Image (tube, rainbow, N blue to C red; front, side, top):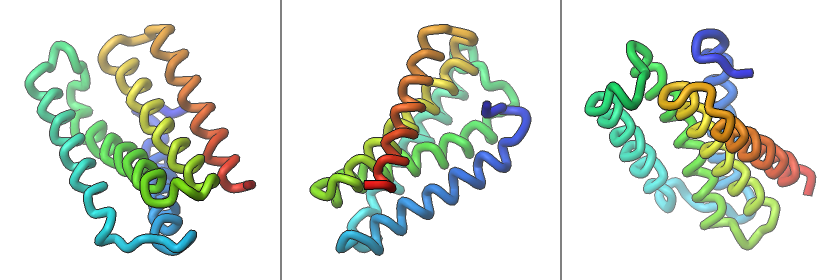
Length: 150
C-alpha cells in the first residue's frame, strides 16, 4: 500500500514512467498525434495543481496537509498528468478500443488517487471514501492491463 511517509520516491518514479508510456502511446502508436495537438494537457494539469495549492493555503483547517504541501503537490502533479493524458488518449485515439480502455483506466486511476488523498488529508479513515478509492483503483488497473492484452 502506498504511504505518504515511505516509498514515495519509488511510487513517483513508477508514475513518471507511466506518464512516459502514455505519451509514447499518444504520439507514436495508432497513427499518433503530435505534442502540438495535446499541449492543453499540461495547461489543465498546471491549473489543477494551482487550484489545489491555493486550496491548501486558503483552507488549512479543511485540507490538513501541514508541512507536506510541496510533496503532496508534486504527487498531485504526477497523478493529474497521467489522468489528463489518459483523457487526451480517449479524445484523440478513442476510436481504437484498447486506447479508449487505457485512457479511461488512467482517468479512473487519477480519481482513485484523489479519493485516497482526500481520505488521508480531509476526512481520515472514512470507509466510504476508502471503498470508492478501491473501486476506482481496481477498475482502473483492470482497464489498463486489459488495454495491453487486447
